[in-house]
Every structure is written in C-alpha cells, then in structure tokens.
Image 1 (tube, rainbow, N blue to C red):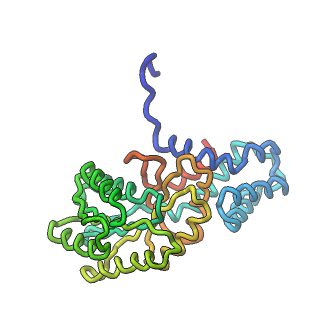
Image 2: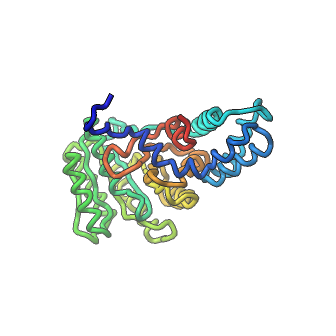
Image 3: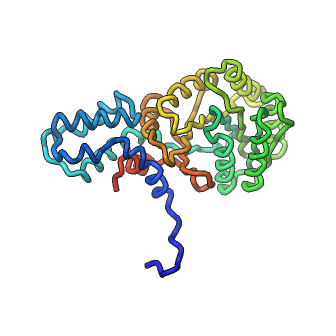
Length: 312
C-alpha cells in the first residue's frame, strides 16, 4: 500500500497505451452498443459500423463481427464479455504483424533506412531505436540524412549522445544519397553493427522527394548489394485512413519491410493499425505513446487489442 505523501508509481506502458487509446475506444461507441445486452442483428450491425468508424476498414470490420456473432447470435451477452471477445478477435487479426525488428549480426553493418512524411516523429523514433539497440549491445551509427532541416541534425546529435551512438552528419543542404554512402563507408571502417539512416520528411505526393528516397537505396547498394536490410516507415496514428495512402506511396519508392506507429497517445484513430496490418501484411515493429525513450515499445497484438477495445 502506498504511504501518505509517497509519489504514485509511474504508469506502465500498457497503462499509457490504454489511456492513449481511450479516444479510439470511445470512437467504437461500445458503451451505447452494450446497453442492448443481446447479440441480435441490430447489435451486430451497430458493432460493424462502430469498427468502420474506428478505421479498422470495412472488410476487417465485417469479418470480425461475423466471427463474434457465429455461435452467439441472438444470445444474451454482457458488456465485459463482448469487449473480451472483440479484443480477442482483433488480437487474432493483428497477431501476424507482431514481429520485432531483428538485427542480423551476419550482416555487418546491418542497414536500416527510415522514412516517413513530415511530422510523424521519425527523427525522434530513430533516436529511441538507437538507444534500444545500444542497450542490446549493438554499436550504432546514425546517418543524419534529413539534410533539409538543421533541427533534425541537431536532434539526432542529442539522441546520439544519449544512446552513445556516433552521428554522421554534413552541413545542411548536403546531398542525402552521398551522405548515406559516406556514412556506410564510415560504419564499415569503424566496425559498426547497425546503421540507422534518417531521411527527409517527404509528402507522398512529391515525386521528386520520393525519387530521392529510391536513389538513397540504390547508392547504398553500391557498397552492399543486400542493403538496406530493413526499410521502416514511421506513421502518425492521428492521420487515420491517410496512412494507407502513405504505405502505398512509399512502397512504390522503396520496398518496405516494417512499420512504426507513433502518437497513439490521444489518437481517436488507433484502429488504423488493424487496417494496415490486414491490407499490407507488414510487421509492426514498434508503437509509440509519448516523447520519452520508454514510450516506444515493441508491438504486442494482445495488449494493443485490449487497449483499443477498453477490455481489462
């Protein structure tokens, strides 16, 4: 028992995730649906519509509600039971996406290219991943490839100090592909295990910037034909359905190997993660609920589903 005057323990990541996804859970409108207490046609339809509103996608919403209704149709059901079953079904859909970012130590350095549109938290995410890899015993080099923004370079240098990672940078405005090439050469010389390459935040409808992303990948291959070994797209949960357009556009520029979803704290559109997982079958390596390093954690389907539905 906590003593009087004693500070409460810090919230766990699951508690922060549940708090962050409270708006998404509210969007589901389960409280209104659950007052009916019977899983009849009207309730099933209301549940399907709620899942669509929460950005899960029409096909996924239909499949989940059909599964829930199967064997339980027209039966009484408690609110807690419906939340539990809904969470189980969403977790089942998301389970294939629950894959950690694995660093293949036989590929040295292991090159990770990180992309995303402006404002997704991409640069901060790179810093957090660098810290995690450093704690796991990897020697990390961060390539400050967002040469358009001096602030992004400075931000990475701060994270580099925290993570004890080298930051390879040039003057603002330098050629991003050339910087990536030089950074990889530097990593080879210094015995680095992992290279994390930041790229300029780009809008998916800017053909020139998207072409530059492909150029970076091609230049890297001149040193290591198998690189980049991982290509991560950082997505902002608050963008909702626009995230689907972003995945399609970036996949056309460079083959993606995994996703990172940020800003799940306070987003009413957390269900978009379910739509992405079902449409693209890409691993979701990390999810983020805040600014601190510990606010970025590996994606766990069961925990996410419970937070999304408000299940215990």
